[in-house]
Image (tube, rainbow, N blue to C red; front, side, top):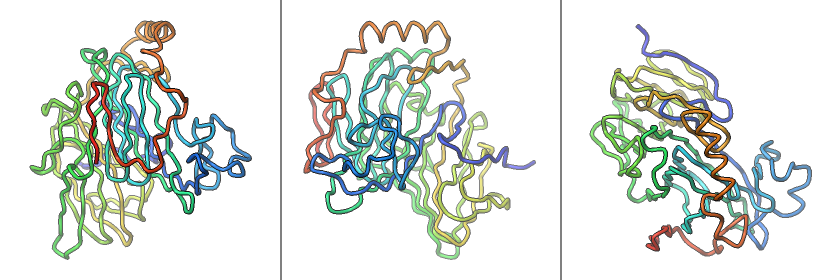
Length: 337
């Protein structure tokens, strides 16, 4: 029987399998910024400001008014994993926490019972492009964990394990192990209430770069797991001998080794796998619960409490231009990189 279960085109956002909810991939070639790290007025012309997802000139403002990004908005009932490959992301939230993370860093945030946060993309360079490349993965929480306290942690690039494989021809494949275990290499701990925190759930999040003509085998995991391979950059690959064009998702058997042979160009993948939660999913915008009644309750509570309100003076919060990578947590502790 084939090890490939399905092949489907990438869309926006990318379709994922339980326990994941979806993945949004952003590749923006932002221009040089102004003195406030926002977009110059001439670049805003012809855009639907506040709801700009059209990719005009190779980039979008998203929900930002003067700076690209996602000004404060609520979440409940799931987690976000934000993988930064290029550019700058500034975080602030309703708990008073904040941070800046850059290429190679990952932010893991548990929304739990409710949090407001902002994710802005400051254009820190005034004299050159400000390219941004990130994945934001929504990972569901089981019913038992949907109302845990909200918090976030940083997985800094210096600490994320990297597996480098060289095939018989000397061609290299590099895998960043963001969650889970890959051939004995264990990722950093996720947030404690995550579905990924229990090794029995076999949650894996890997980003992969393959040299042209390289061969690599993705090792088997649990039979009960779902597995998706997102081929988002390159030309073509062969998975178990089946030719796959770029910009496709391959759903593969999880309990089988999967051989990947790259074509003539460098190739990039995101791999998501894990045991499904197997509970009802009811999503209404930024809220993900198990029933319509819970969604209605969430909306009433958010209307009443605003999940603690917004403690920052601005709607689009960016940290100082010369501020480096850091994480300020709700308990007052700070990490500086």
